[in-house]
Image: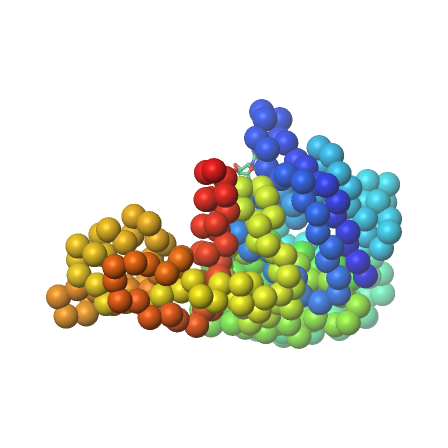
Amino acid sequence: MEIRISSLDKTYPGGYHALQNIDLTITNGMFGLLGPNGAGKSTLMRILVTLLEPTSGEVLIDGKDIRNHRREVRSMVGYLPQDFRFFSRLKAWEFLDYAARLGGMSDRRERSRRIDEMLTSVGLFDFRNRMANKLSGGMKRRLGIAQALIASPKIIIVDEPTTGLDPEERIRFRNLLSDLGRSDTVIILSTHIVGDISSTCNQMALLNEGELVYRGTPDQLVEGTRGFVWSAVVTQEQYDRLKLDYPVISTIPSGLGWEIQFVGERPSGIDAVEVAPNLEHAYVHYMENNFRHWDL
Ligand code: ADP
């Protein structure tokens, strides 16, 4: 399975240029699309599931242009939109049954087995008879995930799936998705939370203000940040000056000043120690360079 996105552009009516010249190839496994709110992630996801038309450019799934294969694409994709809502009064299991039928599962016994399996894996089996709209926020989110996965789609697209989940549910959800990373499945996880990406994705891209800033592995992104992360103990005055030029990642009170971590070129005039980068540092580093590049 391969999704090939070429020269993709989207300008909304009203003139907002939400995606600019996106080139990206996504293959089997878990792909993380990371970017701040407003970067264009949902726009891209909605184009991939054929809910939105691009202004120009094309998307091929296994060589087929999605514009001419809309029905086929929709039957291949399990989608959890960012603003997922329950539109009618159904019990949790009835809702999954509905989703399974939409996904083409016509055998009742097979559906029933699959519904129980999904309810169990998202931890909702004991709540199967509760009305979907009466579930808690986190449970609704998990039911949303179950409906996206129920018909065993070849492409799974989840948009900001951990929003509204507590930390435990977030971990459980990440594990559920990585368990699904079967060899013939593409999973696209769109998020603004760095922690959603680090542990699970083998490939990723960074999107900022409608442009791709990075594509590759999370490890390569982190490596590209080596030599740009610093730790220093500074006075309040030094801190105030430093934060005008550098994104500061963390501050811990230390003596009369602060122990801080920041990202950028080696600073002059203060005693700074190089720190091994992690994905959060890398995210800040790449976003920051993008802004600088635009400022030129
Ligand atoms: P993300 O999912 O990364 O938060 P979105 O794709 O939702 O980003 O939005 C990207 C930009 O496009 C935002 O500035 C948003 O305001 C704008 N946008 C989204 N939908 C529409 C729309 N229907 N009409 C006009 N502008 C839109």
